[in-house]
Amino acid sequence: MQKRVLAINDISCIGKCSLTVALPIISAAGHECVILPTALLSTHTAQGFGNFVAFNMTDEMKKIANHWADMDTRFDAIYTGYILSPDQADCVYDIVTRFKSEETLLMVDPVLGDSGKLYRGFTEDNISAIKKLCAIADVITPNLTEGSLLTGIKSDGVHLSKSDAEKMLDGLAKICHGKIVLTGVECEENVISTITRDCETGETVFHNQPRIVGSLHGSGDIFTSVLTATYLNDADFDVAVSAADGFVHRAISESKDDPDGRWYGVNFEKLLKDITER
Ligand code: PXL
Image (tube, helix red, strand yellow):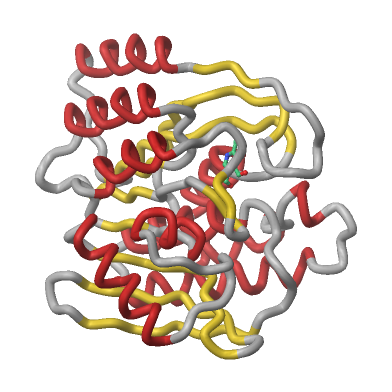
């Protein structure tokens, strides 16, 4: 039977990320992707587009969730991403706990920052609120900047020694007791690693890819969308991580010569067939 994924994330009208990548990717894997927008923005909030405008959807989210509860709606997975404020994080927590059953996979992407910095408008309170969601997640997918913000282990958002990476995973394992996926870590020059820690077995696995370019906007959202979609199709977890890594690597290769790529996002569209054919 078709699986139903609830993606709680923003709609950034320009600058492919969040729901504009989650919806096509999760659908290409054959799942139904139900969306719950946290905000409607003219563009994403990272640099590149000047002053964005944003409409906060928290009140609407509560009303939508009430309607779904009346309908007795069930989800096979819930994937949370960009959350505007600590208040909205409480609302997301509430929605997740209302709709999560024993069988529901909860993927939390603790979207807080990149390249060593918190995203615009975020404070310590956003970090604390996201930690509460991480505590009930089956899988979290912080990038290195988010790993630093969540654990207090300093990094420039790109480089980390292997021993600090282990320390960061230990710190993250105190916050989330499921599976931890730390992305975008350069332990070795020009090798970009996704490092997983299974808190049940204590096993750490390094998935390595050659670095192609610096970061392209939205690649973290593509990664978590492919991981969610592939893992839900009964793939082994580390196989799903490799599939997500491989997809991001190929999508960045497609986009690296596109002068708009840095802020407009990654050109993943032509590769959706790889997900459908998997
Ligand atoms: O890709 C992360 C992200 C998602 N949504 C919004 C963002 C960002 C990163 O800047 O601004 C609105």
